[in-house]
Amino acid sequence: MLRYEVIKQRGTQVITLHTSSESIPATFVCGEVRLLRKKAFKGSFFTPVVSTNYVLLVFPSSCAPGGGQATALSSSLDASSSGGGGVDASVSTLTLEAQSCISAFLGQMEHIPFSVADAAACSFSGCAIVVLACHSMQDVLSVLQVCTEVAGQGNDVRTSSMYIKGFPCLEGAPTTVDAQVLTSYYYIPTCPMCGDRLECTISGYGSQTPLCTCAQSGSASQCTCFLCSSCHLCRRFADSLEYAQQQQRQQQPTASAAIKCEACAKAGDPWICLICGYVGCSRYQAMHAKDHCVAQQHFFSMNLLTQQIWDYDGDCFVHRVVILLDSSTGTSTWMQFPGRDEPMLDDVVAGESAAMAAAVGDSPEAWKAEKKSISAKYDKKLTSSHAQYAMVIKSELDAKRALYESQLAREAGSGDDNEEGLEETELGRGAASTRAEELERCEYIDLATAFEPLESVMMDLGEKRRKTTALLYAVKNLKHELDTRGEETTRLEKQLESCKTALRSVIQQNVATDLRLSSSIRELKETLQDIALNAETQRRLAAQLGEQGVSRVVLVGGSGSAGKARNGAAAAGRRSNEKAPPSDAAK
Image (cartoon, rainbow, N blue to C red; front, side):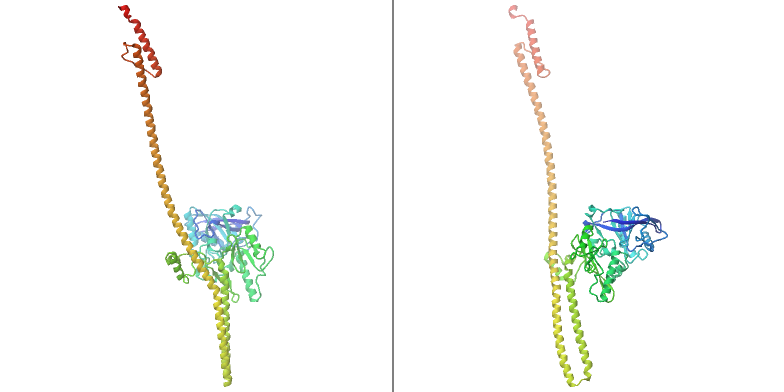
């Protein structure tokens, strides 16, 4: 997932891209385009697919300096909002060939719904940047598939031998880069040729997709596409190689005198920034290259003499490609180092791999499938061992040639000598043969001595690989155990939740039963109180009325009604006593 920014904007170029079915107007902003990649993906072998509707297309070698063939009759140049009254003559603009190639490439995607969201012409890398807005993520994947199928990128859709690159883009407009953005993103080279120098896990380039037609045709080792590139870095590097070749032909000691630090003008060990092209001195001098990269957050800097690329953020070498120059023939060789995601030395370490696989309890096929790599810290040891080996072979060949030349000279002059001369020749030949045998024995001893550093490096590499494999399988076992415990924890949590649910149900039932029993008890208490009150009232009335007791008592209401009933019963008793004649009077 990429983002991009456009700096040093000096104008715009309005063109119309013609496909077979429609005409697409596009406004190219003239300036320097810089690509940013998410830091979370840096150094990762697996890059997740993030949903987006934008695709960023990079067309290499599509721009030329102003005043050249870029001025077309079908295009009009307007001043940008930040520029002056027109386009600066030094600004790179889109060439006529690039316009036709971009139109032809967009014509191959007529079955995909898209629109041009933004476009820019990079004056630093010489690339044209086109951002397409698609309707869905499926359309984005279809556009990337068209970029991956390099067989369909013929000469009519390319402005050079380099293929078109496509990347998912987060936004359809340039990003304003600040300190907060740089905490999550880092710069990568805009030029595909410069980006291909980095490891695939750093640049985000697919290792299976060829960079140019040379790689597609199988002649990648003799690729010289950088010589015709319009990128500032590629041209600067080509000039340095050409200057080095001239110096070596003239047998001068060094080629670094022409390349100096831009801050202190020191020469000898120049480093160039892969993002902006700044040339500074090394950390063993005034460290201007490091100061620039740290201050500007440009992590990648390349040594123009050794072509090693240093990552100031990861503090390690991240170069993947080195171009070797043969000063005698003038040819260049494109040498690729094995990346961390590529197998290495499969045939040599087959037995060792099987032994390590048996030690860790896995099959040899599973071990062969593991990724093997060379750490950058072994580069110096390997280079030194190879140089010693080459010197030993050269000295041995020189000794053999001297021996054969001496033998031929003696055989040519033996016809004019007498027998005494023949005997002297035989004696001399025997002495020469003895000296040659001694020299050969010494050379073989030197050869065996030269192989010792290489053998130690390979033994150290094998030991590191064994330890790494053991740690890898230990991590796998720990991960399996962690997954098992996670499943057990999930099962126990489900059981605990079920028990909590059952407990809540039992508590609710107990509460309902308790409420029902409490209500019944309260009703029974009230009934008992009423019965006791009735009994007490009847007893009192019977005591007051005597034998003329009341045969029936009706109580209405509560305690107040009971009092009224008692008062009423007493009054009724008095009235009955008043009406009845006394017993004495009756007598």
